[in-house]
Amino acid sequence: FIRFFTNYFLNWYKFDKLQKEEPEQGDFDLFFSQFFLQKVFVPLISNSYPNIRYITLKIMILIFENLDALYDHDYTLILEKINERIYDKDEKVRSQAIVALSKFQNDNKTLEKFVFLLRNDSSALIRKLIIANISGNESSKAHSYILERYMDKSADVRKEVYTNFLGRKFEDLDAFRKIKNTLLIKILYNGFLLDRDLSVNESVFKLLCKWFKKCDLNLERFIALFKIETFFKQDHVILNKLESILQNFINLYLLRSEKKQIKYPFIDWDDVF
Image (tube, rainbow, N blue to C red; front, side, top):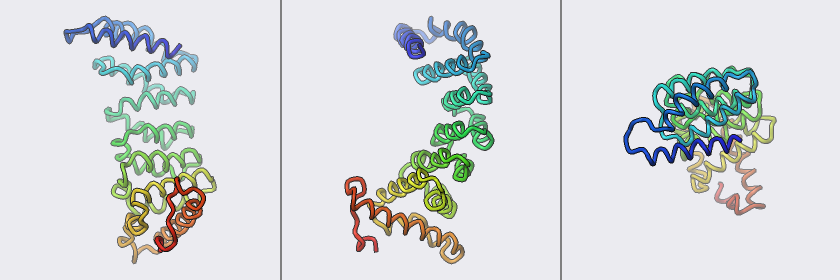
């Protein structure tokens, strides 16, 4: 039903757009603003049944992904109603509200709400979705709050920090330029060597592999990313953590490269030393 309803809407929208030569509102615009939003969207998104609220948000997300633009009054109304749902008592409704709100990240208050929920929402799913849905630009402004989640009580959220945030939000090796190196080492150490969840350990290993390959499997270039010279004399604790990370990573990489040379290109001990 959701897909059928949305496809009907979007086909009408595309047809109306092709037919319309003047910049004035077409049939679809009038229907969307004066009937759908006021008579359908507003009542349904506030419905007492969680499934109705959930489906309404699901439909709106699919529509947002295909509309070129919204009129200011429509934009304001939709944003207001979605903001109400991010505090919904039902987790699955809140989850869809987060995804919907991520389409409005040009709004200055959206990031503030994401940060608040990231630090205060009791649902691991919500915290994970926020990390996954904050855009690259916005995540750079909020990265200190996101990085706090490496100590989250949920393994799924901790894993999201490594796989989605550090692994995908930063292009190439930008994480080393935008995050303080001692903090990055601390986070990697916790996830790779201290975390009791094997899936988190594996996520950190894959992240290190990704960075290692960006350095063309050159260990000297890889180590240089961590800028040891900036804390070599002052912080022996961090230095010891980095040493432990590198030793365990290289040992595990070499072990796996012997078995899966395609996925982990082989490097011999002479190259390492």
